[in-house]
Length: 387
Image (cartoon, rainbow, N blue to C red):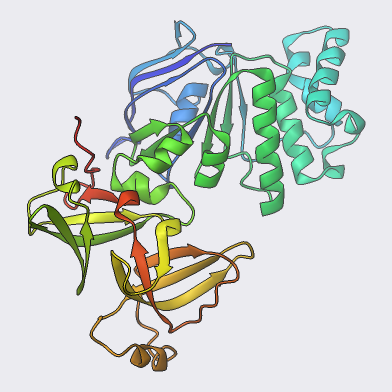
């Protein structure tokens, strides 16, 4: 077991921008680190450099105390689990799990012992004599993990191992992989594009975009304290609402214009937040769970129209658009079916039994205490000032 260190690691394929750009990231011994980001962000390339399957253009990569830039994959003492299971169809489960040990020259008794231990951890003991074709997708993925476990590597590397499974099985395998990793206590780097997997599995999560590390933190801190607009919009399902607004400063208060409507921020925002000067734009971020239906007399409310609703059983996602507060609400309701060109600008998460239909005009409250503010030009979070 060992720590992992990326120190300014860069990978360039031919001509063009780097696939991975000066990545510096530390993974503690025993830590479950998730690399997450959209397609093409560099997360799989980073993992393949760690495995030795891609050459490093520049920078230093360490496993334990050893620099492994020029170490062959077979000598890095890491085990990789791929998106496809890559099992040998003519071999039994036991033979698949123990194949790497056989190639390494371990004794038959040692192979049998390690295969039995791995099968017990993975709940595969009763399937050891079966062939892969007789297994479910989840069982095949556990066999692929067993093949990695028996080697007792310094680190596990996992490249979207659950993407071929159905939704229910993905949830089950998320729990299973996290359980096994905690049991073994081996440093694990896990790549996924699914931020729900990242939030539920990782001790820490590294968010990448265009080859660059945006933020690395615990899942909850990423959710609560994103460093920029990209991280705020990427982490969370459904994602954070991000609305470009204009800031206007008054006497001991700040007003934020949402189109023709305004919310007023508490006075302390004028001194405690690094908000821009009056008349400039910001991007306001508000989580769907912080968009609350209320009455028009409540503070910090805006008028919205329901454009569509998604019933998910345990909750409803309500897509809302801004409306002109001076227009008769009945006009919106009457034209709800015909006016299909309107786009929702806010998503609210509500209880499953809320009575809401498309075309309804609602007053919603946006709590400034739960709002995030981003520089409209750079996307960087406008943080609270240090005291």
